[in-house]
Length: 250
Image (cartoon, rainbow, N blue to C red; front, top):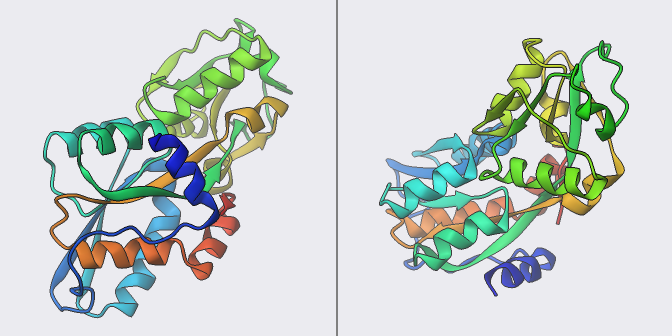
């Protein structure tokens, strides 16, 4: 039901009721946002603009794998907002009673095969990743990029034995950038933001796309400010930033 509610919100991305009111324009406040690693570049850009529009407010980010962040929230880590790279991970936080209101979906992301520039291994599709001579990095299946990769590989009937399993998508991409692997399955947005990599699309990615939900947290120190952040992320201006970064905006 929580997944369905998040997907239904894709059409509207309505603001969540974070409890409390005001506080957004009060000086000297720090908004703490926990967000999936794949949101790093876009959220940092949006954070700078949010700070300009809210004088005296500082936005602090905690970027990591969504499952790692969810575990921290459920263990009591203080934060105002959580943005996950999939609905399943957000559900684990909501089911623990740690969200205020229903999460809403604000963007979608799809996978690509990241390879070093020039594609020295000559990879053309998922089937090439099964070659034992091709070194592949994947995200661990407990994090959203890993779950999506497993779904895509299953759909293609391809079995891959990775040389490394990473805790978030940025770590998998770094393996490619450093030349430690021939390929990695990462989000399209990370390919576009990566250094010295190029992306190879594949058909099965469409069936393994991830919706990204966002929610104000139940114990948010600044619920009014947190609600303003969700409003900003869902705004038309912010959605243009996401599209430019390679996300499919709402």
